[in-house]
Image (cartoon, rainbow, N blue to C red; front, side, top):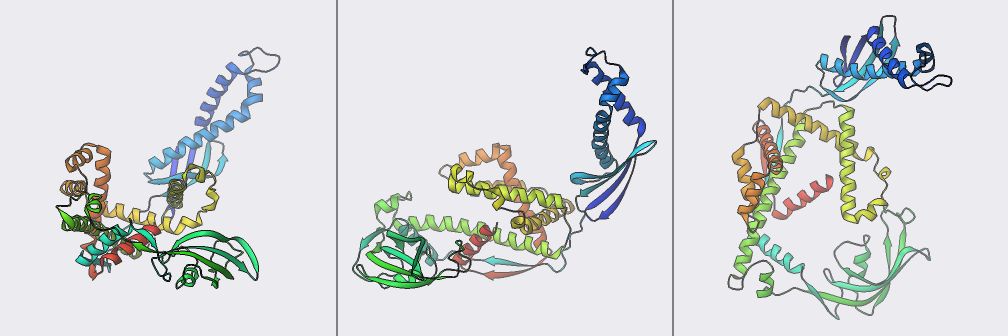
Length: 444
């Protein structure tokens, strides 16, 4: 077999393969003999069909099967022979039967060879600290999660719960989904279209009025998008929030005794918040570093790798959908609602990052620092009731430990890149850090 190869692009190679006709003929004759032993043709007993009849009846089909099999086998032999790091399946082109050889061309995408540039890398590293007011706000949030509502005769304000009837219409015509009775809404949650909640603020129980509200231009119901509707509002009840007292019962919910008191609760809350800050800052600088790396290195990546990443992201979204709405909801979900274009930009960037990070790992010869792995496990275990049990689990389960090693190795890549970058620091509040983390998670 003769093989030559040439670069079509940075991510594509073309192979010219020539397979001796003798290889085709040997396989053809062997398969023809096997077929003759089982062939059933009228007028002949099984296994007694003359060779020329078998050749006439089955020869063309068998020959094509042999050609297909030989191409399948030899194209991978050719890829190995040329030491090509292939990605995805090769594409066969221009198959020709010549007198002494079967000749064909094959194009195959290859893993890109890149040189990572660190020149001019600029990374912003955020810093923050948990302040007393942050701890106080967190405890208040814990109280809000367990708040109750009591009726008031006063005006509806933000954070109050309102029970009301509403009926919507556009140009005097009612529309589907535009009415409800005894609807409960906590003002300020932003559950309704813009302007709706503002129209209720200031109303009291027993009051009725009509408000004008404009649906957003990108509203999911196209027949309502951008249109102004009139909503008749009838407030039945206004309730204000009542936070639970920080008493023995409340403290007990968080494993704190009455003797230990609120100071112990604050200490525990601060510890959890500081762990959250530590992880948040690590994720922030990792994201900023990887963004800078991708932006500084414009590379081509194989379409096959992008397609695989698109499928991974699509499957991940479907799994999230299933988790949120259950199996029944997932059955009603059509994957055609998630076209490739929805994921392509993000998938392409993800593949580029993977290629660049792999190159940094190889060039720097990085291996997971076991001391950092152990410290990560210990820190994670400290939030559990029995840290020792958790440490033993992650230390002895090879698969779980490998996952943590991958996290630490990624952190080491970040450290390696930061050492070559210009790093500036920006102080942010605890709340700002959390908001950015949530935004990054929503982006994927």
